[in-house]
Amino acid sequence: MADAIENMLDCLIERYPILLGCREDIWLAYKLLEDCYASGHKLLIAGNGGSAADAEHIVGELMKGFVKERPLSAEFRRRLSELDAEEGAMLGDKLQGALPAISLNANVGLSTAFLNDVDGRLILAQGVFGYGNAGDVFLGISTSGNSANVNYAALAAKAKGLKCIALTGKGGGKLKDRADVAIVVDERETYKIQELHLPIYHTLCLMLEERFFG
Image (cartoon, rainbow, N blue to C red; front, top):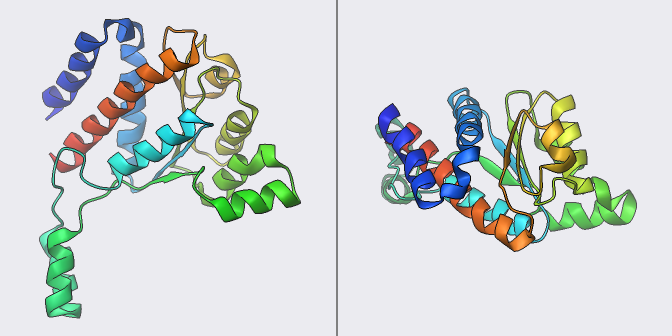
């Protein structure tokens, strides 16, 4: 399995040679996430604009089957069927294994309330404070690395004992220095950075799926 996982990273670099300088950091990010999930914890993700969309995208790949079907364990299927023979069997057939991930950009009610009542720059930090626990991982996505709200969230994450991964460009900015692992793509223009972020996080999702559902 380890060879298959590393091969996925090698394939990424083969398709995107510009990411060669990020290879070690992508691997370190994977190891942080592997440790997080192996110990029963979760991933919190946040960004702005296109990076917020990336956060939602990552959640979608982790919380259901990506390229694998991820069947449920026989024990959980049995418990479902004991509760309701017909509907439990249906759930057992259709539910899929999940790697728990939360996009902090998704909570419209909380976000608008905090914006109105407190300080809009701290919406993501409030999400980290409310959801995060030691052992979880925070992934901050910022093409500049200087997005104030993402940096505030990273600061709250570190204070709560979370590990932090930064996915950035343009030298990494302030977020690079706050992160335990920083993946800094070698581009300066926002759209070019985002074009490289997608294959990076797709590969991380593939590697994690192989590790836990392979």
